[in-house]
Length: 317
Image (cartoon, rainbow, N blue to C red; front, side, top):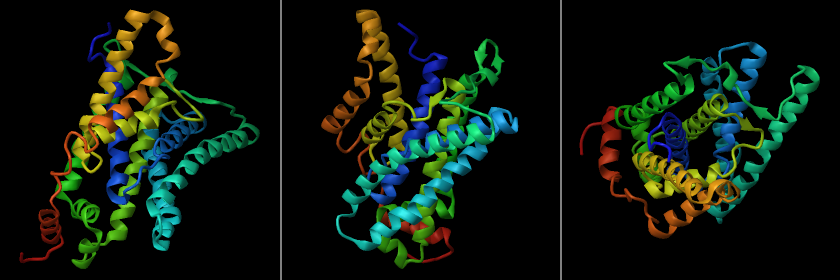
């Protein structure tokens, strides 16, 4: 059986943490599951691939551009899709969930259209975004196996500092808990929503760029990825960013361990049904941990609002 924490597993853990954090950001703010979340990863992969192939950039230097593209798509979807639906009232959560199921199908189609355009205008044709051949090695390890986990660690620290030390981060947390109350004390809730969608899209697009260097990604995305991300977010607690870190880590480690065990006991036959693992994780998370491992206790609206007020220069109780 493969070691529990080899380089490949650490990279998978890093990717799952990044994706689960982004998914939880959206759910915290909007209250519905964004099934198009991993579609941002396809956008990030596309941007990195074409900037490396056409512009000639080092694949690691394409990451900021991928993050900006994913964040811009996230903000666009909030402004043009989510906000108008919420304004109309009615069964918002159901409508938004179904809408983003459609968006999840549209994003790969747009990637195919871009590839078709690229074939006839730029002379580049591909059905798979892979930049692994441009990666470097360090002490016998592939560069992405080192840079990927380090990037995940930096992002976790950055998200923590953003949510606890910045005015916008505190406003975002207050808005996610009670938007009406946050608005009455002067929090710019529209900006908070836009920030959450930008962060969510940026993180997923960055994960897509990492996957492009790691093992490549098809235009349609990675099979079962959204189910694994949802499982990790639910397991950790859909209202807790820190729970998303725990849930993503657990899902990635469990998947690696179970695949190794299945291979030992069933051999290559396990490859034919290993795709059932994401669904099994999701069913387990919803059945046994509906409120997540962290629950909802880590959010306290009054303390968050007091911090938000203090950060914005207000005084008093």
